Length: 282
Image (cartoon, rainbow, N blue to C red; front, side, top):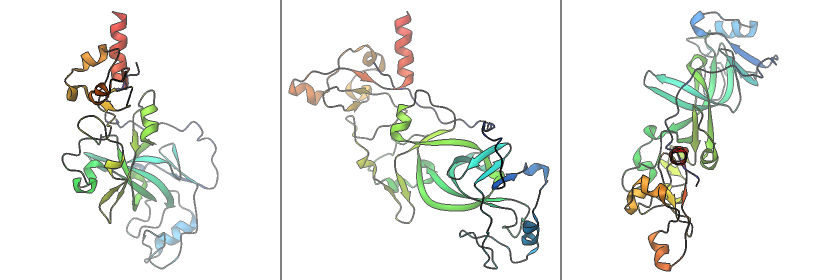
């Protein structure tokens, strides 16, 4: 039996030091802890900070129309290295954190009001709480989206480096489901949120519908699978408890049962596996 664990909300942990961070080159941007108020500025940064016209926009230009010519391959912040394309947790408020991908390291001097504060460009990955239910095109509650699911967007912003909380990972749905254990700060994505159209693409109806509730799979939930049609079912939706489902050696869904086909029980999720192993040890 291959059990499926109820996934927990990714917990926020302190960023760890990158084991490969010893290889520093001139294309690394190193940001000191902002709380120390210490900045090491190049002459170019100093001059741009003195320029009254220096302010940022999403295309990386100053208000004077000059491009930021310096390009950095990666960012070092609080002894952690972030490469372009890495995912990170971003602080929004005391009760809200967000997921974003590092797109560009801008550096110092680009913000007119705070030239001593370094900027980065990020691409946001929205959570369910950031998206109107209408965007999912679903009749009824959108309860098949877990706290670990994020949606890629084309929304980009320039933000201060000190907004970074730490590293995180974003997997495809299939990769996430195949993980032996779910590390902290781990998410998955199976669709994009198109802000202008206010739609999820592809639509949840194209994610694959399961059970008698006809909803997409949710990694938090416990299911049993019909071996004949490979459809997953919530035990409680077919008149059985989780304990009863775990004791089954064969399972046949009602539609396949009417066809007279044979079936074998499958379970998915580490929480269920722990329960089965506990029974075997008794």
